[in-house]
Length: 113
Length: 117
Image: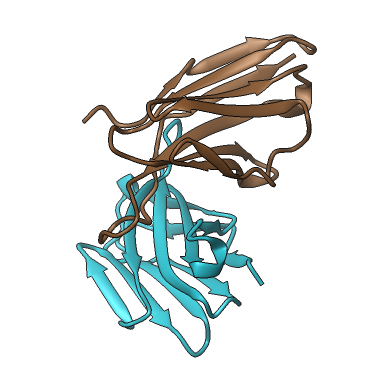
């Protein structure tokens, strides 16, 4: 019940395309859903996060879509650029994970020029 | 702000040797996390501290691993004896006290790449 399932494992998109990465969770107590971005040789860094009181959040070219009833959330990258090539992790937390982040397995995204 | 500081950045050692990884969290943060990242297993939480006290060490692989946080500005992760299967990137992360807008955010250090031969 504490798992966060992320897909796909890897994704290749042409520059300008819209990669979509999906995550699903089971624990209804989760109330915080961040996405982290990790470049090679670096630690993950918070990209964007959402709480379940809204269905969508945008920050620049990055959008989280959240479907509470389906217990799913996804990351969309508009007008993707080669510099967006990285590994993306979704995560979730709530009171019964002691607010620890439960991590997805990660998606390696490559944006081709 | 200097961010989370980890040392060493790279460590190569031989099987059976003791390895000590070090972390300095961001000043004012009161939670500290140690993670291990491998291609096969992804990002795994090993242990986390709150106010210098270990809260959850269920992710520590076995007794060869130990972690300490003697004060708010320093933590160590020790592996003794090390084995080739311990080869991975080890990350330390910290987060601020609970009660604000981004209290769930974890700030990661650059990691220590450990190779055990």
